[in-house]
Length: 375
Image (tube, rainbow, N blue to C red; front, side):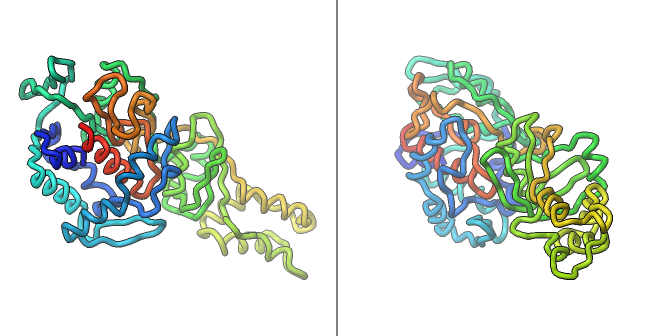
């Protein structure tokens, strides 16, 4: 996006990529169909030390602007839940869109080229590469973060920023599965594959989506979303039955209040094995003790299950990197370094992280557009 916009301004543009083909992360996104934007994008859908930084770029290149490109190239797409848009056929169509737009803007793409360093030089910068030095008046760093290293992710962008004295907000995995402590693993992980809708809470941040039990802990959309806000050692709280009074049938006049009735109530909401496990770990007392107060306490527990994760699955399983180049060092309108004119940082390498659901792609398009309009 940055190259396309700079090329449209008649700039001479070279894109360097160490991979053997472009857009490798695009190709695996959205289950191979690329969740290329979200119609509901607002600055509130992004995590950053400066929550206002993304406003300018997002306002000047919106989901509608990218949809115009999608329509121009005849790409068929469909809407899923919560504003998410996916290609009908393949994520490859988005890569091809970008390649064609680059070609129209006379942008040159050079693959299999490792970038070793960027240095100041007379009139701009010298980029040291595996194929020799390249002179440039402007450099846009669009290297992504540390997530999914098997796809080629490196810390190059952070190294370049540090070399020019730009501060870094410590990178950590985001949109990542969480792992259980050994005790919780013994309690739950034999139920791997079971899922249920929850409301996940971390402080004042909440997400209502599915949570999935895995062989090591928890995953699913709700867990990935809340993971970007979770800090090691902090507890997380889950409402396991949003908007439902699970044990209400036991409070009806003349209702049975025995364990079988409690299990049946749980099974009406949760998968059978999950319901049975919950009851085994949180049994109601004998019939004579199942008072209204006891049932109310059991109900509260269903809506406030609290665990402290052992950690995350790390960058290998993270969809994004939280943190990055400190936005205080960048101009929000142009993405240019405040101290090094001609040096720009865009996309995931910057301390702006979107929610799950196409938001990070929209930040990539918008921040790339902003830099390309200036570089």
